Image 1 (cartoon, rainbow, N blue to C red):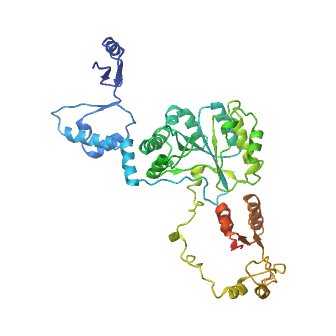
Image 2 (cartoon, one colour):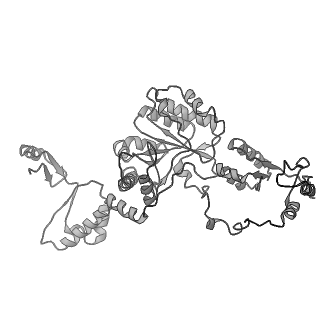
Image 3 (cartoon, rainbow, N blue to C red):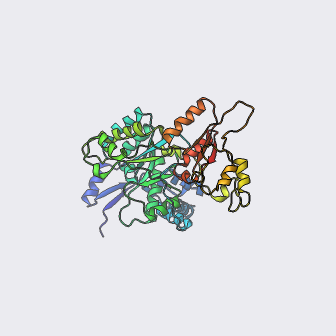
Length: 439
């Protein structure tokens, strides 16, 4: 086979050499970015340091002189260090250690921080992006942009613009065809590496998601092996059916006319960019409308929120429950002592006095329990309590009023409803209020 490439001994290739190569039917003259020899690596750490500073895809020229002492050691150290940069090999090892475990998607951040997260993906429309960034600036908002490895390599100036405006970057993944977990993890590891080496991004990138479509089992496995969190979203306001829409108000009404409640703390909303073919401003205007009409809180970067001390694990595993609480409630605990417990703990009301209002109790039992609804005290004190604890829109305002007047109250909740808004319930407790059970 006729060679098609000619290796030059230095990065600078004179024009006459290129002309000579062309005359000899070489299609390309490639130049080494750097050259080394056996004396370049006197110990293994020298080779490791050299490779660590070497840009990926560099061409290295190794001058071999058989008479040179230490040649075999130098080559061994260099090839061993280069092997450590093989992301496909590294991904395979990580997947083996992971033993098939799959990461679970997260569409909500468990936190008491008064914040909602906007995330975006899909670079390509520079005008749309500029308008969006200006809109976010007006709101003093910071967002998380999921970018693919290809975008990191091909749209460096755009990614740099995102970072210079104070936003964070996560890793977007394109799920195309029969992509394996190894290929996906290699891609994620390369993206993490590029953000550090090419953009100086010092945050440890742990958030990833597919830029289009649904999660695959292969991506779940890759994320688990690589220590990535698959951050999805509670809502995706951008719909493909609205691609030719020009009115942000119309899009907003179609989404939220039947959803009057405010966004919750920790909610994640994901916006797919480069979707509206008839407007460069609709996306920014829609993000603004949602914030103005459905959000009480700040717009913070999800990358910062997940690392905040206000985040917590939910639900807790049994061994993580405080020992003082664990085992306090168990089946049969009140057998034989139900009415005694009711007389000691129940604070009633004069109008709660029928079997319909207290199902499970007979008339004589209802007659024996408290109906005064008062707690005797010598402090000239009244007690505020709230039940059916509601939504962020009402409770957050109520918490602010109570805090303003230095009041500690009791909130009675249906335990079955905790799962729908644990952040709000935890926020109530963090403000110093008491939580009771509303049966």
